[in-house]
Image 1 (cartoon, helix red, strand yellow):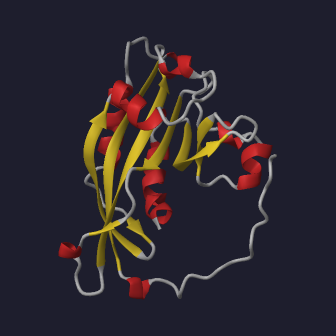
Image 2 (cartoon, rainbow, N blue to C red):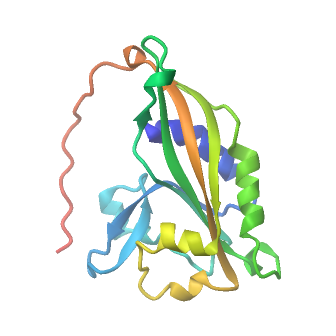
Length: 206
């Protein structure tokens, strides 16, 4: 459900001129050859192409990119019973938008620029309403800004990236914002019961 809600939000993020590589909602994977190495990967990437085409490296900091942006969940979906109206459920979920920036590739010679990039995201997204088929999105609310140190702890520490640690120091920059996405959904207006599709064969890398 949250991936449907994020579609118009993702469209707005991709309109920002400084965003070069956008991953949408991301999850954590472990390197098939080295189980001690963990990476963020877009939920839009399928299992086979993840390893066969090197897609698992798409959201790893890389000096060839101007910037990398992706979203990770902080909480699961929550229903607020105090705001529900008849069958309509008021739902929200907290998310983190993570930004990695290559300062000189963006044309700047400053110690840090990520605060300005985060303000761009706030201006583009927060307190604005988004319409999604089947759901009525109320708004995106800003919870907090996370600077370099907080983002390293909250977003990047769970990954180890192999030998990429230098890409988190100057002339690179990182930051993030925590947001709450709120929307209404009437379960009676959704499609029929959840339907199983054809099973997908497991991919083995051992």
